[in-house]
Length: 243
Length: 311
Image (cartoon, rainbow over all chains, first blue to last red; front, side):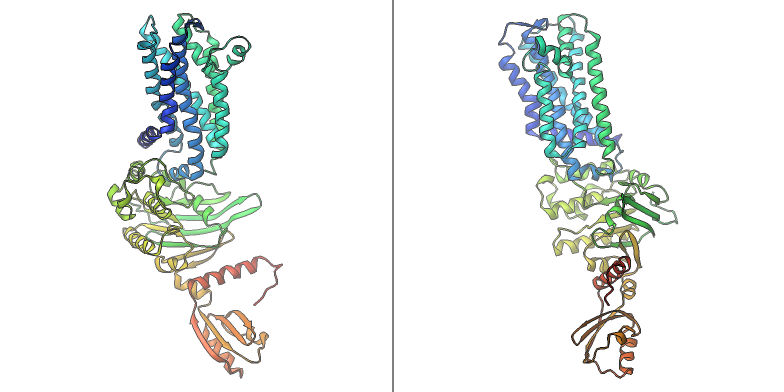
C-alpha cells in the first residue's frame, strides 16, 4: 500500500510537469468557460446556458485528462518496459494500474473545482443547497473513472502509435455526441443519451434544475464503468506474460 | 533478514518453457548457491532471457519447478529478496534520476540509502537530470541502480554492461565486486566472454534451452579442449589424425593442421611416434570464447543429424 502511494505521488508529479496534459485538463476548460460561458442567454436541459456550460466544461476537463492523459502513456510505458521494471520490484502486482487510476482521479480535482467556482462567481450559477455543488462535482469527478478504465483497456491492448487515433476517435465521439461542446436535441440527443458524457452532464443539470434525476442516467454511467472496467481487466490479463 | 537458509538460493528443477512447438527452455535443472557469482552464457535464442524471465516471475514455466530462496519466484521478488535489471526493462520518464531511484528504493522493504546507490552505480553526477534525456550508457547505469536499491540477497543482471564504454565497464565490475563481497548471490548474462572469465566464479553454458556445461571458467575451458595445437604437415592422412588421443576437433587447410586437444602433449607425441615430422609446431591455450564456441558448436552438430559432420 505504501509503495502504491509512492507511485501515485510520482505519477502526480509527472502529470503536473506535462504541459500538454495540464492544458487539456485545466487550461482549456477554464479558457472556454471564460470565453463562452456567458455568451448565450438560452435555457438548456432546463437550466441557464451558463450552468449547462459550467457542467459541460467540468466534464470536459475531467474526461479529457482521464483518457488522453493515460491511454498513450500506459501504451508507451508498456512498450518501453517501465511496467516490466516495476514487476521486478516489491510493488504489488496491481500497483501500477491502481496508481494510474488514483493519480488520474487526484489530478482531475483542481480542474473540476476551478470550473465550478468560475460557474458560481463568474457565470452567476446559483444553487439552492450546498450539497448540490458536492453532488455535481462528484458525478463529474467519478465519471472520469469511466474514461480512466477505458484508457487502461486501450493502453494495455494497443501499441502507442495505434492508441493515439483510437483514443482520439472515442474522445471526440463522446465529446460531440455527448453534448459537451453544444447541447443536444432531436435525433442526436436520442443517440447521445447513451454516452457517459451526456449522462454525467444531464445528471448535473437535473440536480441544478431541482428535478429528480432519472434512475436510467445513473444506471447508464454504472454500466459504462462496468463495461470499460471489464475491458481493462481483460487487457491487463491478456498481457500478463508480455509486459 | 539476510537469507540464512542452507538450501540453494535458486533452483530450477526440470524447467521447460514452450511457445507452441518451440522449446525455448527444455528441461533445465540447476542450483545457485549463496555467495556465488555466476555467468550465464549462450548464443542468441539459447533461452537465457526466457530463463531469467521465469526466475523473476515474469513468465510461468510450461512444466517444472523454480524455487527462489525456497519459495516461488513471485513471492521472492515481491518480498524484496531479488534485485534485477533486464534488457527489456524501462525507466519512468519525466522524473529526475534521483526521483526515480528514490521511488524504487521506497518500494523496497530494506532500501539502501539513495546516495549510496547513486554512488555505487556511478550516477551521482547526473542525479538531477531528467531520465528521458540520458545517453544509452547513462540509462544503463540508472537501470543498474534500480537493481541495487534494495538490500537484496540475489541480484540478477541481463547483459549489464551493454552500451558501456571500457572504462565504465571496469568501474561497473569494481562496484559489483563490492556488492558481492557482502555475501550476495549474483547471476548475470553477458555477451562479453572475457567478462564472464574475469568476474564469474562459475559459468553456465546454455544452448537450445538446455544446460551444456557448468563449472569454473578453467573447467569450462578444459572441457572444450584446453589447448590448440597447430603445425604444417606435407602428407596429411585425415583418418589417422582423427584417431589421435585427446583430439576434440580437427581443421585442415592445405598443409596446415589445427587441432583442439584436451591433452596436447599426448596428441603431439602420438603424431611423432607414428613417424610424422610436423613443422612450425605451435601450442596455445584456448580462450573462453573458443571454448564456448566449441561447446555450443558440438551441441548444434549433435542436435541436427541432417547436417554432415565435418571434423
